[in-house]
Image 1: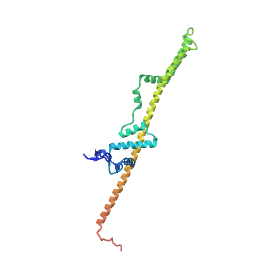
Image 2: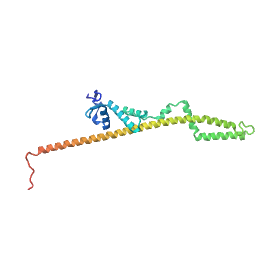
Image 3: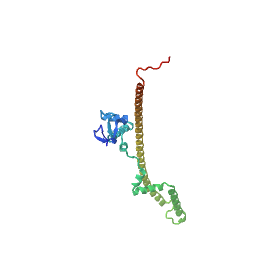
Image 4: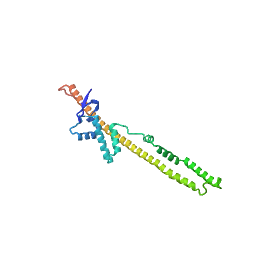
Length: 240
């Protein structure tokens, strides 16, 4: 099996794990050469070392544009370095880690904010007033102004409000995690697209340079063929 040497670490690697520095984008190559003077485009670098410099380059890009590399950006850089997927199902993660109290709070918040609750509770109030004001008018358990009903409504409101707030707080936490996840995915996609554009520009530039070299070689070959096909001392025919 063919092997080669990484110029940075001076270690032997299989040929498939080495990358020629001439194939690396100019900005990344400049970063490598700043850290390792004397390294040229004719040398090779291992994929492991190249990952480190790519991560360092990405951190520099983020620091220049954002101003500070936070934990979110660090996670994005690590996922790019390890070629890992960063997308995940945020809702599924939240749903699987719910406690019994959180499930109950979600159910109460969902039911308390529906037309079913409004209609059923309105029917309960109407039935309560009808029973105490009409059906049992002689000896009602809760005569007008329905003090017991007011007590029940106050107790229900005092219990329902914090339960709904618990559900809303958890929803806000989910939205925050979802927002951070979307930011990481968008940031990684933007960096990957930028790197792809830089790599394509570099490859096109290399291809154009090679085409010019091939064209120059063809011109030299044609000149040699013309010299060989023209006898020495022969002159062009006269038109007179």
